[in-house]
Length: 262
Ligand SMILES: [Fe+2]
Image 1 (cartoon, rainbow, N blue to C red):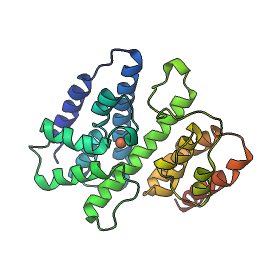
Image 2: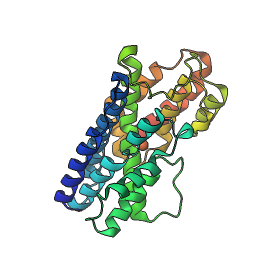
Image 3: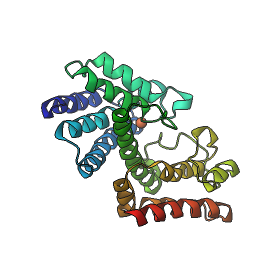
Image 4: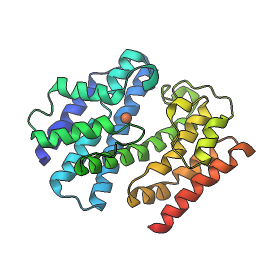
């Protein structure tokens, strides 16, 4: 992909998001959240791509994948008023439909646009299939890490914002009971990533995001996690309850082990 092609996708994205306006400030906050998220995921992927010394054309492709990965969030929120895929629609599939309808990839070589579409389609699957083409797998891993690295920021911003300034759809409307559920704690304590179907409380949602440390692919991602202090900050938001101790310890050990490697 050329720099010019990337520029044209980036300009299209600005026009596309400008076509979504909320009647209420609360709606607009949710659109703005995804616009800012997209640009920060782009910055994350550019840092990872640079660190991996990708060629210029591959770096442009990685940036384009970041710009496109969440375009489904805009029609999802407009039509369903939520970011919870389970109660609405798969936002990655909606991104693919949107990108095709908008025709923004038509001028890009089909082998490149196919990589982009596959990476977008797979950015939110729980586990990647093992038989992926290695090039697709690499770009998919890049977007998955870059995305997680910014979702941690989104959650921390949400939890520390004044209630009236919060983008309401962040927590999927899960009840804030001040507790994590037992199933969720057991999964994380066993070193497994949490499946969204196990979420029952707002604190489970925080736990799910902590469990993403088991699914980061690049050393640079762990460096960014350490630099930005995401994990310590998220742990600080969990209930100070004895029940959470084991899960927290497993997450902390994973981050420490990975940090020791880099
Ligand atoms: Fe997404």
